[in-house]
Length: 126
Image (tube, rainbow, N blue to C red; front, top):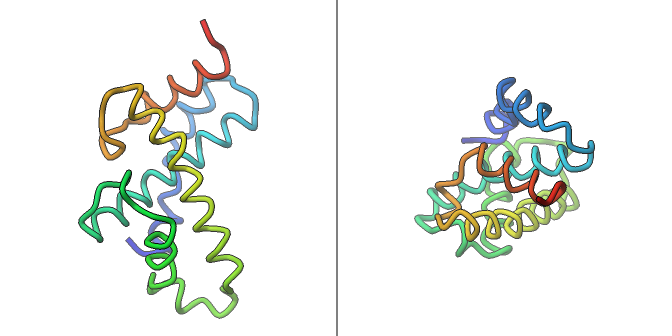
């Protein structure tokens, strides 16, 4: 998946609807969207490197992002964007690892309903 494909696949309308139906505060729905998108992108990195997502390092993620062909062709792309995007993906590992532990599964196996349920529980504990 290159950047243009990954940007087109940020979230499907169905995924957006499922997240919006939670009626969580805007910041939590935004965090959910970022988490879902990051999971999708991290799956590509993990598969490309033949590694589990949980084992990826920030440096491996950054190298992958820098070597992304679409990113290399973007004239307006600079190091600060690469750093920001790397930080976004790396930071997303925290909730993804927590959700995977809660669900007793690997990060790669997480589903949108599991991610949504975890965020809902964090915001509206029983």
